[in-house]
Amino acid sequence: MYELIQLSEHDFYMDCPVKTGLVLFEEGKVIAVDSGLDKGTGKKLLRHVEENGWKLEAVINTHSHADHIGGNRFLQEKTGCRIYAPGLERTFTSRPELEPMTLYGGLPFKDLQGKFMMAPSSRAEELTPDVLPKGMEIIPLPGHSFDMAGLRTADGNLFLADCLSSEETLAKYGIGYLWDAGKYIETLKQVMEMKALHFVPAHAAVTEDIRELAQKNIDAVEALLEKIQELCRKPRIFEELLHELFASYNMTMNMQQYVLIGSTVKSCLSGLVTAGKVKYYCEDAYIFWQTV
Image 1 (tube, rainbow, N blue to C red):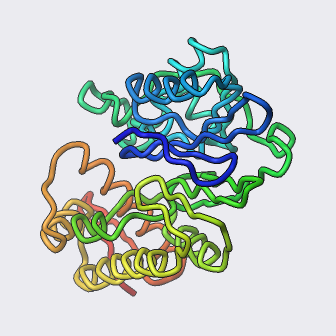
Image 2: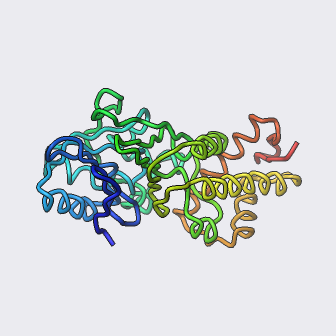
Image 3: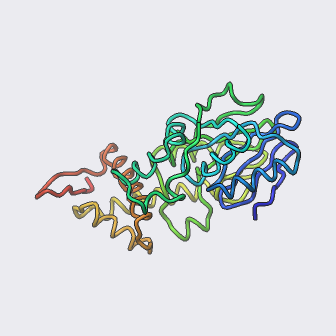
């Protein structure tokens, strides 16, 4: 765990719960792809940089979830490196308190401000093609998060961030966090057509062929959408629907799961309403959701 694995001549990743990349782009200079959960992960990443005699020039955050930006501040303070993040992810990286606020839908209390929900802030700049080394390309991967992006390196490796989960995670949980289920499915269909020397998902094994796992992730999201429509054949208030989903997927409720999975279900309902497959109405100060 946390060892540095070489993918190709210039590309490496640190094998840990959230894979972080290191891309050598000039003599002795590297860019990190994400920084991991916390200061401890940042320290391990920096140790690999220093042991190889490299200099960390920048961290590119694929998106703003805490387990991908938690080492930013440590690395920035230690090395003076620049931090880049795409689109709206940059705002959340600079102001990470927005993450639990968005998930909860209000002022987050202490239990929603731990390192899994809210990373230390860092001075993030907009990720644009001109800040990348020659041969590196931004790959838009929306769906899991607002403006999540992957990175294709000059060597041909593709860092995929959180655009899919491992088979083990799908089997254990069934429901993961999604901002937009429709865009997520579209992204995975595009990923299935991509070519790369290696695909590097943050939460799944490195592979040379991503198609089978991508399809399993698509199947899982489509099954969730179908399950929501099935449960809403009878009008449901949101809390009742969430309870039924947790029971169906054999999940354990706690506050973090409530806000993460609850946010996913709300996003799914939004997509289904837009598609004309679910409607909502107000009665006796309740909002009911019902399949059309």
